[in-house]
Length: 101
Image (cartoon, rainbow, N blue to C red; front, side):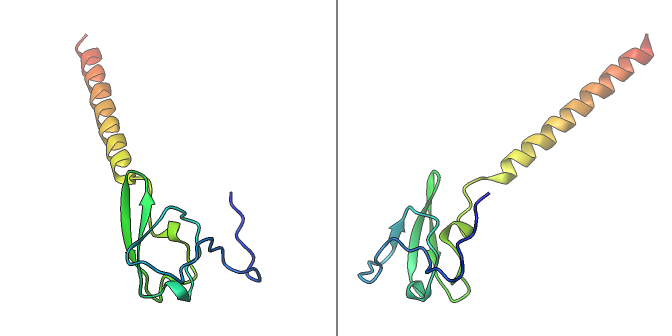
């Protein structure tokens, strides 16, 4: 578990964004969004693809990683449901076969 950075410390921003290019690509997801980033566009690496984000006042104080999910949960959940359904069918077939004999 990661410990949060203390409030009295400055936010972690390793890049110098004073010379800002439009649609800047960021690989580091633990950068704290400050007022310097407001109304700007960023691209952030999130695994296989690169996601885009327009920073608004609601995003300030959070980190880049909060807005870019790296795992696809839906596929895994659907896979588990299918496996449970198949297992249930197999158990039902076994019960039917036992009743016949």
